Length: 163
Image (cartoon, rainbow, N blue to C red; front, side, top):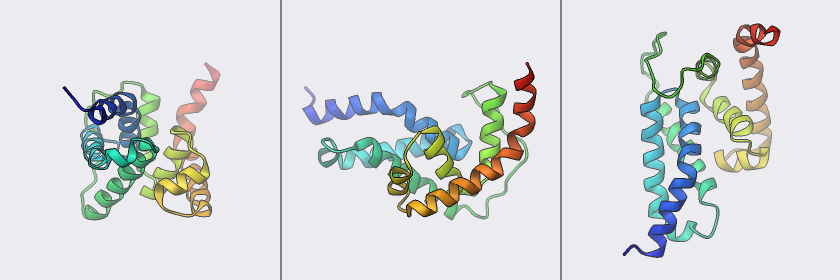
């Protein structure tokens, strides 16, 4: 029989995996990379589960996921980017696809702030704690990110408003 810690960890995974996967997918724009980030995050959460169980494990998991994402883009700066987006099984909604493409055009830190603030719906303080930056930096990155997103998404939303 499983220990109570293992049962609680499995319940945590069941409750938070979809949220973490969505966050990772919005950060990376790639389903496989998102799954790898979530898997590595969950492994790291498991290692510290006994201490995290009574606290806020989802907040810790988001922080780990953000840090892993930052480590990945720092180590792959020389990666060749392509204009073509590979087929994915995650969505067929053109608006979501356009949003993910637009998010990929932001800097990694701007993307993290915009996704945490407006998709995950964290406060500025919680976003700052998750990313390990100041609240002022969160405000600045979020503002710059939203300013960059508006023209990128303007063409896709104009047609939908008139429908």
